[in-house]
Length: 108
Image 1 (cartoon, rainbow, N blue to C red):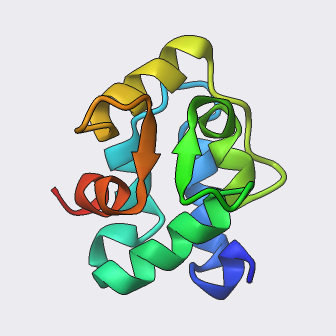
Image 2: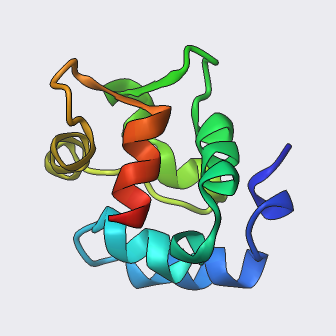
């Protein structure tokens, strides 16, 4: 499954352009791509696409490339952006984002 099976390509492109030169904000990005209006199950499908290694978690090394999961044109997150994203989503402090943590971040 690809991200364009779940989200509109034009919304992905618009969201990526919004953060091309601006500091990445996951909540704003998720809103721009239409994820905040998705059901919990649909958000979990997006998570599974982003979980590149299929571990059930998005680890810090995967998180750095999260925008590429939406589109090959996506940029890499900076180290500071990656750490801020992880801090915002990792509610149990295990150093990775679980599927439920991801869904909560999108909908909080």
